[in-house]
Image (cartoon, rainbow, N blue to C red):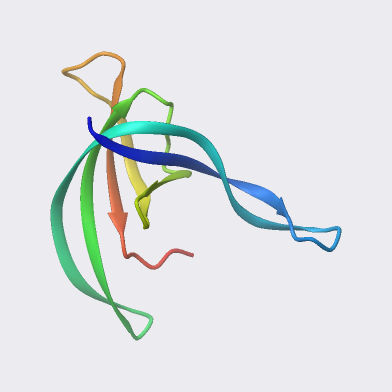
Length: 102
């Protein structure tokens, strides 16, 4: 596990005018093992996107699909999170980058 990632959760972030907007806040900095699984071109809402799927292993940080990871300059949306069946205390995450998110 040599790559450094940041786990983020959706949060209300001050907008500078006394209100709030939806944004992302840092939960933790973690080390991860990252493996590219597949890639494809997809047409979403009339926009062509390149979607890459990743398999990521982290120490158990209780990550869920409501979280996301930042790796270098890439946003990794968590599609599925589960305990690693071979290594207690670790999580396996299936993530996507390049996807259009709502």
